[in-house]
Length: 273
Image (tube, rainbow, N blue to C red):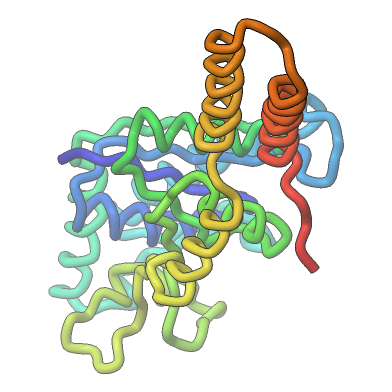
């Protein structure tokens, strides 16, 4: 079954996204890659913020193309735009293998796109994706700490169970940044592994926490159904007795209050200390 990969972006540097994209496209059945930039994280108007997702989409494509031709390109810093010939840093066999990896990624039939989502619309957008594309993967490798908590919380509420991060297990080598890319990391014989692509919400502690939250905050449909059932009992009693008595008045008021509370608590859930 085909799947979409949604990557949250917070930096224009493409290396971290190239690793996740190459890993997913070459090892999973991914037919769509979407870069998402959450705008107005600090409350600024969404229209005033540059669309980082478009920049990342372009930079990732450029870097993948260079790598497929045996080159590494710098983005940002003093060496921005500089190109390194990787044939000078790898033996002939490793160099050929390197190029084939990224050529394979580019040759897959994948639809590449990007979008900017307002912070205030993030929950609605994740719910839409979860509803229309339930098999999607979500990558938070490059997400800032301030936004990561929001995405994890919304994943709990939205029932998202595929929230991944590319976890580098070696010491970073900034003098030779191409050593931190997948072609250097994907060595099956390496013990321990140089990287893992891990689902951060697929842990016993997370599953237990999710169940506890969902039990304590029942869905809106359940809450409203109980209120409607109470109202139905009231109307049945009224139909049988044919008059308004104290019981009917009390249950009518109770059902109305229950309906309003159900709506309010689901929209504005109480904070727990």
